[in-house]
Length: 346
View 1: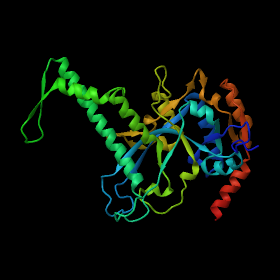
View 2: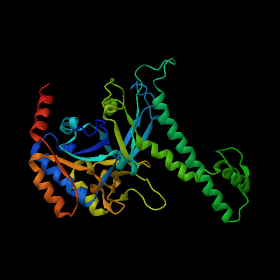
View 3: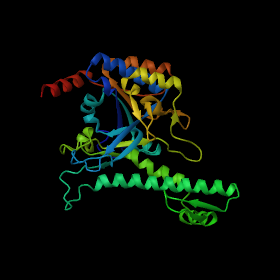
View 4: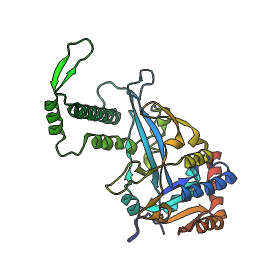
């Protein structure tokens, strides 16, 4: 039965496939897939970082400058795929896959990606295809504005705790302006109203950065090269880092031991990545994990784990030794390899 086909009583399902980094070498893929499963058991689902860049003029590489915006993301991704299409999907993204029903993922805070199309023509003032890029720029500016307001709020609190009544504001060579601290405090409180806190607002605005993605695969070069809708077709959902209630936080920081393990697992995790504050940090050190939810291991919330048919018994043994109740289904691995061979032949 097509589990995602909308049959009465059936829930839509989403998949997280792996190991994409070794999908060209069968022996390496199976070995790496089992190692990823072992890391999933010991560490949990990895929320990995990525930085997307949206140039100010993405359709013109010659005049693009540093005025663009960077979207700093930390998330784990799932794709909406019908079971009948799963083999083709695994041929591209890796022959192992975790299957979750949509209700479970939504309870974990999963949301669909907001796909933003790049401009498709020269900006001449008569077209509106730059709107999506401008949305990213404005999200950046709103987050910056809120951070600055939060900084002023902290400054006011520090000044009041010291018994100060006024602040002197000066901008370069201009004469300083004397500001009444209590008046500023009143204004900030009035603007905030019942909105919680400025820091909380900053967090929500920044969280939008983890939910956006490009429509076309040409985003890899930052500049538009043609419409193919490759990313849009994936119908991706994400759980982003930092979700929390008053009682629990969805993800956690990795231990040094776990960071080292990820670095050994794949070269990707050893790559340096520039953070929001400009530091270069290893990919693994910026990653986070979801290990247990409501006392259950994250893998026990999956409907099943799909693995190559040639390795099923081995995987079942791994789960048995870990005392995890996880259902194992199989992918016809010979068909996966044939699909890949056909693609390379085209």
